Amino acid sequence: MSAAEAFTAEGGCTCRAVRYRLTRAPLIVHCCHCRWCQRETGSAFALNALIESRELALLSGQPELVATPSNSGRGQKIARCGACRVAVWSHYGGLGELVSFVRVGTLDEPERFPPDVHIYTESKQPWVVIPAGARAFGQYYQSREVWSAASLRRREALLGRG
Ligand SMILES: [Zn+2]
Ligand SMILES: [Zn+2]
Image 1 (tube, rainbow, N blue to C red):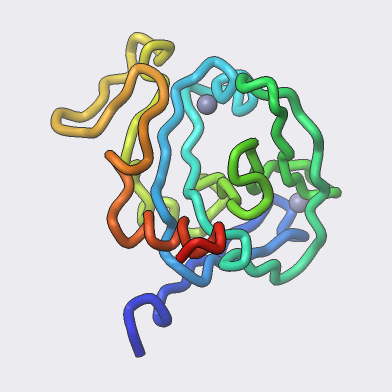
Image 2 (cartoon, rainbow, N blue to C red):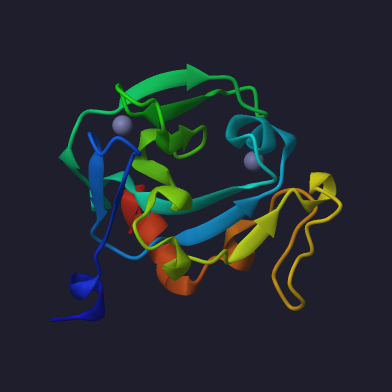
């Protein structure tokens, strides 16, 4: 069995109606310090594990996709448990529903998914200290400069270009 086949991680909402499983390692994990994420989480940043939606298996429940404004102007869809309303993942413009931004804090073992890159650090809370040596960008970045070669290939495959 390859490492990719052996990978699994589960998570869900607070009331446990929604449970899901990642069947592959994330493409990349973002720590986003933008004001929009700060507002939507009520916290200092959002931690999102990007994964192909076909690698995100719903085990129970049926999240409701809530249309929400986004900084890009293209909008986003936030998947929320219909009962407790906790947000479990989002779809953004660009790759749309092909990719899910899973909220790392809803995973059962969030410590397995530290950020690969910090983004929008220009609006980070002043007391948040980015670890020395961490990849960090004032705004966004070019995927080809940050994503692993394997993740870039997975993205191409997702877009039907692989
Ligand atoms: Zn719930
Ligand atoms: Zn953000």
